[in-house]
Image 1 (tube, helix red, strand yellow):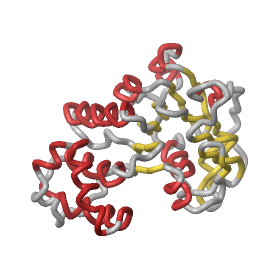
Image 2: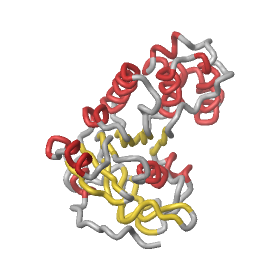
Image 3: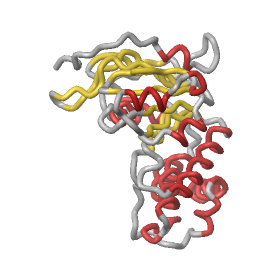
Image 4: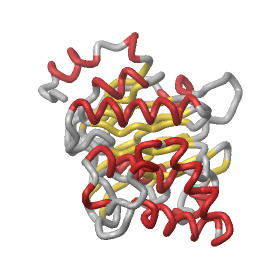
Length: 259
């Protein structure tokens, strides 16, 4: 399948997103084409995330944001192009190799077991990662990052608020101190006040040293946290750069793609 008729020349955002000149980005997508069976969703997408950096990947529904996240975490192999993690080409490697390299994907939605308690939801993945002897320490670290979860530790996850469930889904993947967290639509289905809380947590995660790739349709919160922004449209990078250098709202509105 060929790309849509309108093709644009876009400055490569990957180099601009690197944290230090000459250093390897934590993650780099280079000329990535990807899709599902005969349907292509990405056409030559390139961007990078540097150490301790926050990159917002934004755009309308169907632009290719979630496909990019799946490629970046090894869940989907590109049909063309490369996926490079800390200088190592992991293109075509299974997702567990990406996880071992420090790339953690928190998919959209809440991803919790509603009939289990908060602590049981945490213990399941932590036992697999740290072994039985390391579960208690990992749970305690999760409660340090997310104090509200500690207060709700014996409560069934299904009875938590939407924001608390989102925090629980993040806590399940963050205790191993990843190099990069891919947060796919962290504001999905949440009330504005809860979105603020989730983004405060993401800020703390970034401040602690984990780089962020935030996939969002609604851009306001993401831009407050982002050092760099990449806008996808029809599977292409349409514009990229520092948020303060781009008139994102005007660009998206003019193209008929409000966010």
